[in-house]
Each structure stands twice: as C-alpha cells, then as structure tokens.
Length: 232
Image (cartoon, rainbow, N blue to C red; front, side, top):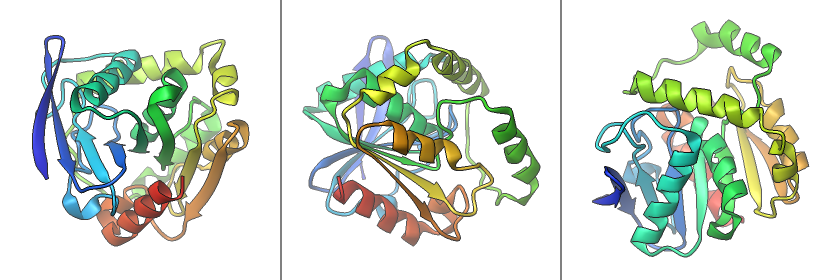
C-alpha cells in the first residue's frame, strides 16, 4: 500500500493506493471513522484501489464538515491523482456517501458499489430494529472523531430532507449495486428500494455475515468487492 497526500484548500488528505487495473475509490464508514479498509488483503483484485481518509480524521487534517465537502474532497482527490472516472465503493456510511457522490457527479463515477449502507432515510422502525440488535453485533474497535461524526450525521439528515432527493436518484444513470450483509442488524429494505428506484440498480445479500464482515470474514469481503467491481 502506497501512501500519498492531496492538498484540498487548507486540509491535507491522506490517500492510500494499491494494485493495478481499473480505478476504484473505497470509502470507509462511520461517519467520521478512520480508513479501516486500507489493507492490501481487502482490496478488490485486478483493480487500482484508492483509500482516502476523511477530512479531520486520522492522518487527514481539517475538521467537522458536510457531505457536500466530503464529495468535493473526493472530486479534488480524483483530479489530483489523474483519474478520469472510477468505481465508487463504500461500506456502511461510505456506501451512502458513494450514492450521493454519483448523483452529484455522475460524469466522474463509472459505477457505485454500496455494501451494508443505511440508505437516505431516518425511518423509525429501521432505527428501532438497529437499536434492538446492537447487543448481538460483533464488536469491532474502530477509531473515530465524534465531532466529524456529528457534523456529517446532521448533513446526512439534511440530505434526506431535500425536496429533489428522490428525483435525483430516479434520474441518475450511474449503475449502482447494493449489497446487504445477511446477519446485519440493520434492515436491508432501504437498499432493496434503492436498487428498484435507480435506473440501473441491482441488489444482493451476502449470507451469514455481519455488518463488519470486512473484519470477521475478510476473504468473503475481498471476493464480494472484487466480484461487484468487476461486474459493472
């Protein structure tokens, strides 16, 4: 894994890169978590994978910011490293950011791979199911920055309230592949709905794995993200 830095305004953003082939940018979850997917053994095979660490987190400077800024950071990284278009793959919150990025910049995104995302919703029954299952979820210790988490969470809520949200999704021509973890405590119906809504959507479930199966089942993660990135 090679380490690079990209200057975006006053922030210096860390980006890891590994492999050769079509370009994929891999987004970690949280929001506000360190880039926990930045490991060679987790990278999609046959691709050049980029691993940005979010602004204000870990090795990247800056501070609390909005989804708009997160998307702008990804665009600045893409331009700085000389990529024309790339697949945008994300886990959890990263999958939701990938969708937002594709809607805002479809010309830059070859495809979206969203794994175990939430979807753009704040549904009460979804939240109740999530809270009820938290005690059964495998514990994975991931560093995060609470202030970044809070700011991005508020911005996510604002996004879900936008009047043009669903029109933007329904008219986005970027192929999108939504993948649920079979043993995730997070209900997968928002991902299935998104796959039906976007013009080129697909939905699948990886059986018998929890939300953070990149940690508990790394071989399954690698094969899943490789197949998903190869398919589009």
